[in-house]
Length: 134
Image (tube, rainbow, N blue to C red; front, side, top):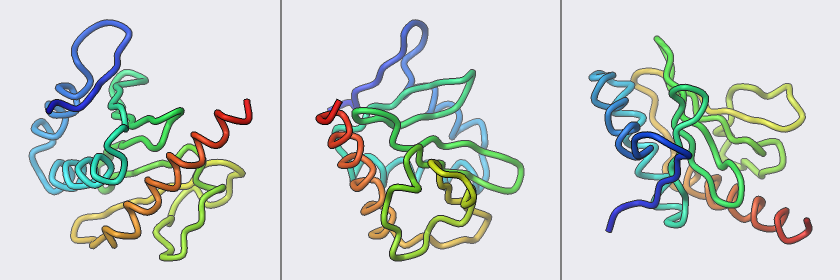
């Protein structure tokens, strides 16, 4: 079954994300592909989007996280990360803000997959609870 995607106009966001992963062709592509798989496992209802001229985004009742790639990092920014419990201490970037939190992955980094999936599930639950209050 294909993953639901959303884009106002233009190519399917899932295919654009596939293309970005292929285009990277190095450890960053592999890391982004792995994190994408974990996001979709953690929240099968997550929707893939392509925003801001080339940023993969996963949403469920609001943005869960973005997947940006830089020369030395893959950055997963959780839109409401400051509101999420992070007992495994995965958040290692954007720690000073009141809302966002990010995970910077560098070449060779290992990620606690269970803890990451718990963060994604918590982000979805947070977004859904906030939507109900609105």
